[in-house]
Image (cartoon, rainbow, N blue to C red; front, side, top):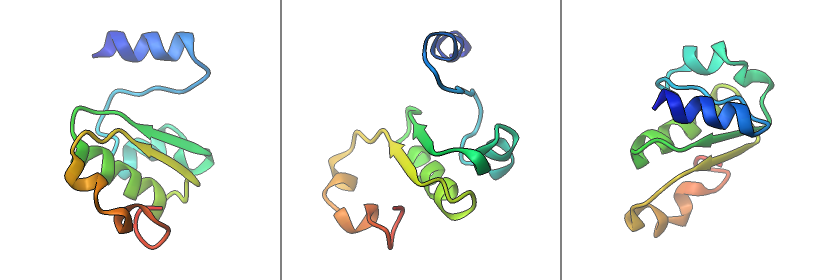
Length: 86
């Protein structure tokens, strides 16, 4: 919710956004090309993974964290190495 985004932005030293984080134009708008870290924490594992992939492939963000709940993804370590999402 927008209330949570505002709370995070005001209490932590981060830039929090509400929007489709997997869209390259949304990430570009918030300065992803200069970011050192991206944390994707939507309610969708797939969206979080895709957001990290876009951050990796297009913006070369060195550190990405995806909130993943489903063990099916976590049991595939090849997905999350430098040849994969990174």
